[in-house]
Amino acid sequence: MALLPSKGVVISVPALVLSITAAAILLLVLMSTLSSSPPCTCPIPAKVNSSIRSRERISTSDEDIEWVKSQIEANGLHMQQNVLRKGINPRTRQQQLQDLLQFKGISHYEGEEANNHTALPCPGELLVEEHHSNYGEPWAGGRDVFEFLAEWAYLTPDSKVLEIGCGTLRIQGITIAWRDELSLMAAIRYELPSQGLLFKRPLIVRGEDMDFSKFGSVTMYNLIYASAVFLHMPDKLVWIGLERLAGRLKPFEGRIFVSHNIKFCSRLGGDECTKRLNNLGLEYRGKHTHDSLLFNHYEIWFEFSRVKA
Image (cartoon, rainbow, N blue to C red; front, side, top):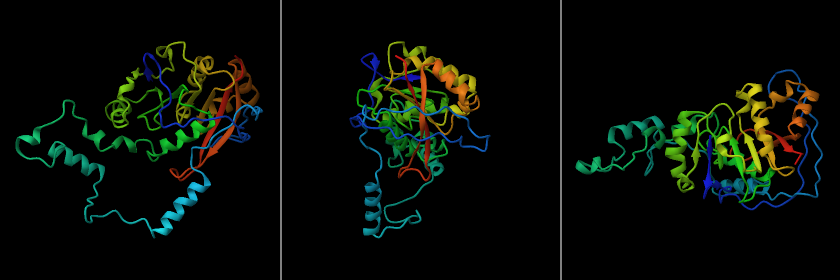
């Protein structure tokens, strides 16, 4: 698990996030889980006071899509085969890695200068970004997820965010829970330097038991989310995590988002799930779909909030 502190405290969301002001949350009824499992009996979404908050759009708009289309058409662009041509020498990641191993990363130098390496050489597998292909979806999808969460959780530059199962920082979260060792190495050795985030000095703790004690007991989060994580975990462990984190979510304005499905809840049945959520001070708010230019399919997210101070 990891926490990005600033001067000993949890840091704010990257400057990439624009200031998000207040509007109404679109309520969608949770119909069913995403698989062919039995019909979902989920909790009833809570009503939202639309006068409390508003949302400034930072993700792709209809106007953005039309502009992209117009630019492609105006320039007569078509997707072309990526082949050898003037100034372009297409290489697969495997070919790039072989070049790095053969030439030790400095193919333009000869003699003694060919062995002139940096103090901490980066593993070739990370330099050719093999880890960008580890998640079954385009790496740029991380930006897509970030935009959705920033809008729906009304994030501002001062918001505190906890991500459960961040992998290699694809979503570029601020507070991270780590699971996979290769992903952890890629994040520390490649993604943090390449994103200019080393100065944040993140506190990183490996763990798979939903133990968040290393994060301290003071920080209250505006957003806690899990992208394609809970569906790979035993239901019991998910509930343990929710129990430990419910009290760390800011009352009323804080949000928990879970992607893909919430079988940990629906398998209990709607009434039992609602009861367990209420015992934790949590409330189910609805199901959302999100579209962008960086995915070829809709992402599905389930929203929860804390209703007790």
